[in-house]
Image (cartoon, rainbow, N blue to C red; front, side):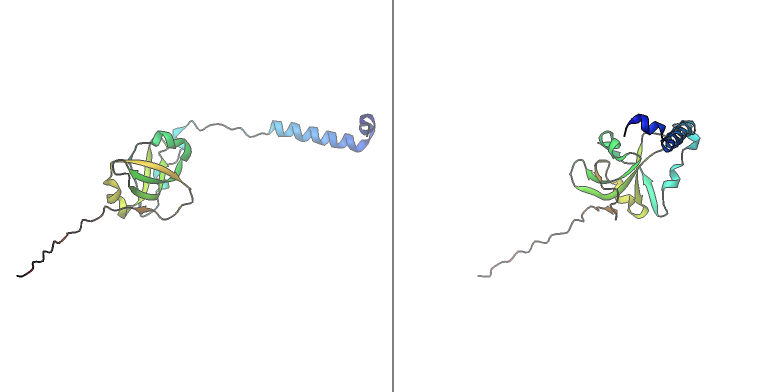
Length: 152
């Protein structure tokens, strides 16, 4: 089709007018993306803590490297720095709304086990991972030595 014939056609003029009107309306009524600068509008951290859980702090050695990966919250495995053993599996980590700190969401009954470890490394996991597990320290078993003597 030739452009001049298309412009002479009334249908093309109507479609062009409708397109221009929609474009102008979309420019006029476009939503504004304003960043939240007001600290009072941020949610309280207690809104993220379900019943039966506690939010505890833990010294995560590699938090600076993984915070861009997890954003506001994520799921991690925790490994002890010295023994390199897994301390916790599929544990949720949450960023504090007012600071650049992170907390670990842990079932309340398992908190004492997790607090035994002061320095840990975090490994980022799939956010849909379930079933938080805290590794307990193995109990020492008493060994018995049995001596057999031969009688002459």
